[in-house]
Amino acid sequence: MSTGIKVFAPASVANVACGFDTMGFALEKPGDEIIARLSDKPGLRITKITGAQGKLPYELEKNTAGYAALKLLEHLGEQDRGIELEIHKKMPFGSGLGSSAASAVAGVMAVNELLKRPLEKRDLLPFAAMGEELASGSLHVDNVAPSLIGGIIFIRDNATFDVHRLPAPPGLYASVIHPKVNIMTKDARNILADKVPFRDSIAQGGNLGGLIIGLYNSDLGLIKRSLKDVIVEPQRAGLIPHFYEVQEAALKAGALGCSISGAGPSIFALSANSLDAENVGEAMVKIFSDNKIEHTLYLSKINQEGAIKY
Amino acid sequence: MSTGIKVFAPASVANVACGFDTMGFALEKPGDEIIARLSDKPGLRITKITGAQGKLPYELEKNTAGYAALKLLEHLGEQDRGIELEIHKKMPFGSGLGSSAASAVAGVMAVNELLKRPLEKRDLLPFAAMGEELASGSLHVDNVAPSLIGGIIFIRDNATFDVHRLPAPPGLYASVIHPKVNIMTKDARNILADKVPFRDSIAQGGNLGGLIIGLYNSDLGLIKRSLKDVIVEPQRAGLIPHFYEVQEAALKAGALGCSISGAGPSIFALSANSLDAENVGEAMVKIFSDNKIEHTLYLSKINQEGAIKY
Image (tube, rainbow over all chains, first blue to last red):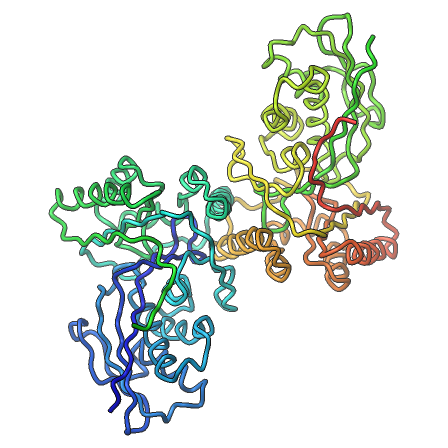
């Protein structure tokens, strides 16, 4: 058995206030780690899973990372290649931080690196997306794309992988807090109304465009005015205890904006620099501490690399 | 009586497919012309109106250009200054080309130039918007802003005049056809449903973001994929005879995109260069000619100057 290679795929924040299903960005940490090794025994196998509290299956067809890796191997005509995967979950499930996306990305990244990069990193996207689809039931790359290629990503269209990396002002920093409460992504999706007021749709588009222009121009004032979600946040806020208190505290502490990360329960804030982000993080922590809700805080600049071999 | 000054404010295309109420761009022509002169008789007066077939009132409070100019003069504390305005309408009413916006812009521009620019051009926007509001009944700057400052304009928020100029790929060229059929802006607004499918709202946001990114990156492929309106166009297309035939002909002739200009009935197309725009224009003309509908075609690059004194 060979020494193998080790990859890391980061967590990510999808939706980014006004960008429901169209935006996401990568964090430095947390993330998932996968070790891949060549083996004499033909075919792909998962040999070890840690950090998953028994929640992840070893069957490839049911495992996000395994399924994504398998789809890539099939595409490469390498499905008989002997490969072993060790999956080390190093981030929480159902946190709204793209846990399954990180697993899927790590799976395809590990196999691609082990096989000496038959595909460009960016071309791994469809296969990682298949893993994410297995986990979430729908094809969305707002977590997968930033976890894979890093940066702030705009998705014009999921079905055709029409994704674009946006510039970010130097210094832009995220404070992300994960309260240990359970939200099922499926429930968070089902709660959303099928129709939205046209007026809100226009306002959301205004903010989305404003955010993109603010990012291109490093216009922090415009970014701040634009980081608002008038459609999804009001519908989902009730699922997260103390959401509005945390948001208010973050904004008071100097955040440019603060909203729900993915489907929640994590809450993210963006700040102009790391010092602001620390203050914002403290303010968020205080709300959950005062209310005796277990939580984890992550402070991170925008991760511009995405998944890496290391 | 002094010689006076002459200003021109151009027509504009609002909505730009995916940018309902959030985008507009200025054309080179047509547009409105206003001549302003100092007079010994105190106060602002409209002394002459041409090209309006008697449809425009001389009372300041009811005239788009006069009202906008008056509001500017009041702001400047110059409402008693003797000023005469000659309004030369050089573009059609109710065309979907921002006719009232051009009048309002020309009005404030003329007065500001006559008084030797007490305000920066951009700061005229609120006053021009008041003129437009008088005409349309709502505060929207998606025609006023491009007519005033030129370029492709994104409006994050109308109420706070949060407007931003977008870059345009060199060569980007518009073909705009105005069929002589009547649509009332009010009717075109009333036909729109109060609620839209959430899925469509997301798709529209995807295209809006894609268009902005395409403009920043001069990515013509992305611009082409993004120039789609899945919300408003399907509701309004029926008001414009042969709309879908014109659109199909324009796209076949090489347009990047084609949709309704403002509230219609004008139809605009954007092309990568002037040659494509000519072919597209010809294709659009053919549909209306074949159907014996009187029409006017305008070919224009993006007007980057907006209103000018000349």
